[in-house]
Image (cartoon, rainbow over all chains, first blue to last red; front, side, top):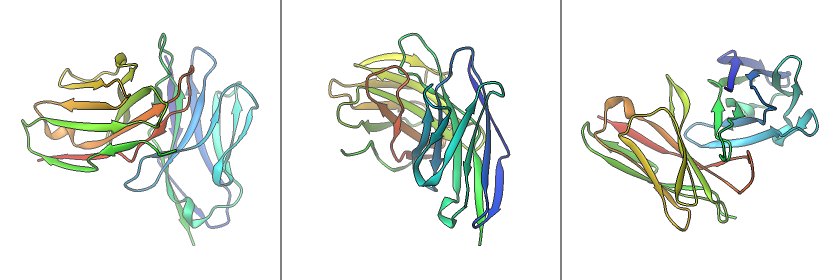
Length: 116
Length: 113
């Protein structure tokens, strides 16, 4: 069975500082991994995805994530935080059910605050 | 392409009532999944439909049901509402293919009084 653990329910950084949001996964098969962002009162927007190609994945808005199989991690980073990055971020793994599109199993989410 | 749309965006019901939520996927997407989001439980998978057939179901009581129409539009229904059903209900669609990424709608905010 697959699962996702996000370390830190709240992360606060200063504008211009490095953003690091942690995600560890558990999967019995090679995983497909995703990071989504959610702004208040909105749905989820895909930031980036790992689908067994390059281990360093670049996404939108300057975010990137590195898949590390040995550490079962898929941490999200951004070199320089912007005020507009304040949101909740979710790491997800694609579940494996026979014939399924691969429904997502989400972590609990990390709320990112950006201080001016 | 238009994104995933969900109606209504906000809904207030009382305990014991039933509710139907609607989701229109991105054109060409045949898979529709539903998720419930609450502060306590986070994002939880409800069910997935593909070509009008329920392909998978999460761990929710039978009060939660859904269906998909031939045009891929989907509805979910919750009968005998309970206070704990208050949540944001998100619909996501994906194009054919194994473990394709899912595109989410804005959600329906259901409040049960």
